Every structure is written in C-alpha cells, then in structure tokens.
Image (cartoon, rainbow, N blue to C red; front, top):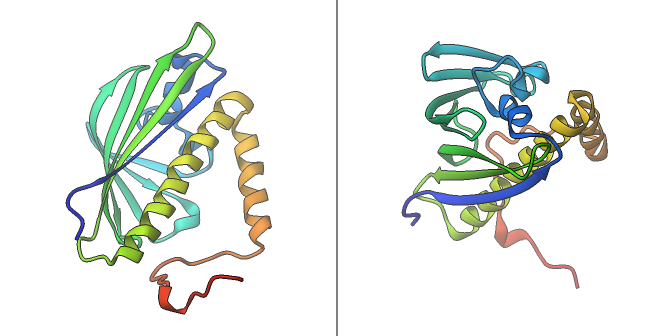
Amino acid sequence: MLNGPIEFDFTVEIERSASEVFPLVDLSDPRFSQVALGNTVKKLDEKSFELEIAEMEGHAFRFRVVEYAKDERHASKVTIEPAIGNLVEAVEDYQITPLGDDRCALTLVTKATFSDDLSVEEIVQEVAMMSMAVEEDLTKLKMHAEEGVEAVKAYNEEQEAAFGIELDLEGFDIDWDDIEPEQ
C-alpha cells in the first residue's frame, strides 16, 4: 500500500551558533548528543557507525553517512536491528542554517520507509509515532545546545515519571476496531 518513504520535516531555532550545534548531530564527534547522554557509538568504517542506546538494550542503530558538510549538514541512512515496529529504514538529514553569529535554525528531514503491507490504521499509527519522535529529537537537541546535557537528562526523567511505567513497544499492536470514541 505504501509507495516509497514518508517525509517528516521539523525546524527549531537554537540560541547557539551553527558550529556549536553541529557536533551534537555529528556521529564522528565525541560531543555527539547520544554520547553525552551516556550511550555508545562505535565507528565501523569511514562512513558507518553503530549506536547502542542503554534504554533499548538488544537493538543496534546502524548509521551510514550519506552527506556531510561541517557545520551545515549531516545526513545518514539508519537501520535498526532487530527492527522496531514497522520501520524498515530511515534517512535522517540534519540541516543547519546560521541566523547570525550566535543562533541558528536546525531542520531535521526524516524520510522513513515502513513495511509495505500495512493497513491504513497501521500507517496512521506509524506516522504519528515518527512525527512525535522527530519533533522530540529536535526539542532535546535544542535543550542540549542551550541548557546542557543535564537539562536533557532531567527532561528524560520527567517524561519517564509522567508515564509512571516503562513500556516495551516490541510487537505493540492496536486493534482499531476495539477503540470506541468517548461521547
């Protein structure tokens, strides 16, 4: 039913220069945001990296850099093994536009390819989850750049506490026919 990737495009203004923001999205930089959060990045070859996120034990996020322009653009093709949900692969393209000496706009364009045998309801669910994930990524990057990694850690703890539970979304499925709207 799906014909090609679905594109998600979000932009946030950050009160930091492009040269201060770029390391946060550059997998090869020791200041990469995920490393600062305590996760591990392994360099596999000149353009390939593997990210291990502590909260997602057992999953490997594999990145292949497809475009790189220091302080301007970092794009990677991403696969997750084993796969999570119906996501087959994604291309994450971070684009930084200077807005002066001390601020910039960070745009994240994500082109996500999902399993091609999804129902309309499953497509809607995947689009909603990916939209939230892309927007959340930019929110955290802005926070990291402007307030530091400790602010992101505190935000993550607040989000976890707000839910009060940890969810294992592996194999998560919604039966849309069983959901009744509230009157």
